[in-house]
Length: 411
Image 1: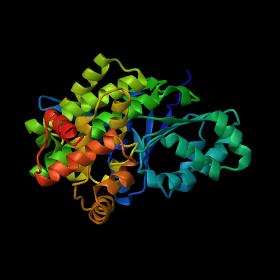
Image 2 (image 1 turned 180 degrees about the horizontal axis):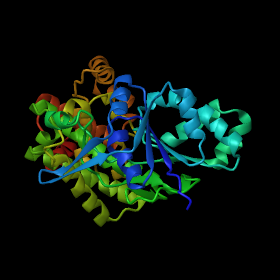
Image 3 (image 1 turned 30 degrees about the vertical axis):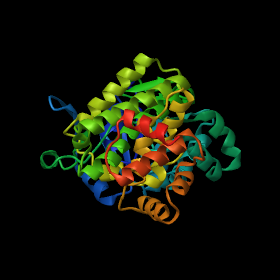
Image 4 (image 1 turned 180 degrees about the vertical axis):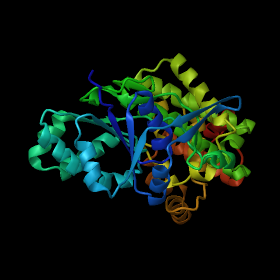
C-alpha cells in the first residue's frame, strides 16, 4: 500500500491571518502546515507548542473554538530549510505579511524556486497573496521578475500561479481570558471563506469549502474594500469625535448607524452598476457587514481603523472609490461625502494623518481635497467641501435631507 504524502502548505507570516485563517483553511484541506515567521519570540513559542486555538466569535451567542495541530515552524532566516521546502514537489504557498515586507519575502523564496525549476522544469507552484493592498499578485510578479534569473522567466510565466485573495476575517487582539487559556490564541469573526483568483492557479486548487475560486477576483476585492473597509473607516471618522473607542460602540449610535447604512447603500449601487452584482446580492451583503460591525466581542479600535487618513482618503481607496462608483451609477453619494469630510477632521497619531492635518491647516480644504482625494471641481468635490464647511461650524452628523438642502442652497 502506497501512503500518499501530504501537501506541504507554506504559510509566510504567523500573525493573525496566517495563524487564524490560512492555517484553518489548509488544515481543512488536509495539508501539513509550515509557518515561516520573522518574530523570533513567536517562532520559539510555536516550536514549543504542539497546538493552539482559534476563537471564532460570529456573535455573542455564536462562538466556536478550532484547535490547530500538525505544524512546523521556521524562522525567516532559515534560508536553506525554506529553500528545500519550496523545492519539494508537493507544495503551495500563502503569504500574509505587510506589503512592505513582500520584497524581502520574495528574495528568500527565489533560491527555492530556482531549485524547484532545476529539479523538475514541469513542476508548478501556486502562491496565494493575502496582503492588504490592491492587486498584490501583480506586485509579487514584478519582484519575482526582478530577482529570478532571466532564463527562468518562462517558468515564472507558465508554472508559477500568483493568486490574489480577499480576506474578510477580522482579527482584533485576543481577550485576556483567551490568552490565559492559550498564549497563542487567535480571535476573529469566523468569516467562513476566502475568495481566490481561479484563473491564476497552475496546479490543483485545495479541496476545501473555505476557499472559493472565482473568475471575478477584482470585483470581490473592490466589494470588500468599498463596503467592509469603508464602513470601518466611517465608524472611525464619525465615531471618534463622539468619544467612542471601538467599532461596536460607534455603530450603536443611531445617527452613525444611519450614515454607515446609507453609505453602504450608495456603495452597493455603484458596485452593482460596475461589476454586475444584483441589488439583492448587495442588500444581503451589506446586512452581513452591519452584523459584523455590531459584534461586541470584536474590540476593533477606531484609532486603528481610521489611521493613515492620507492613504484612506485616496481616490481609489475605501471612501472616494465607492463615491465615484456611486456617481457613475447615477447616485449622489451624500453619506460617503460626509465620511470623507469627517476624514479631514481625523487626528490620528501617525505620519499619514499628521500630514493631512498639517497640509489642511496650511492650504485649506479645497487644496487638501485635490491633493489627498485626487479630485478637481465637480459634484463630489463640492459636496465634500460644503459638508466640511458645515461640520466645521457645528460638528454634528448631517442627515441626507440636510446635505441635499445644503447642496441646493449653495448652488
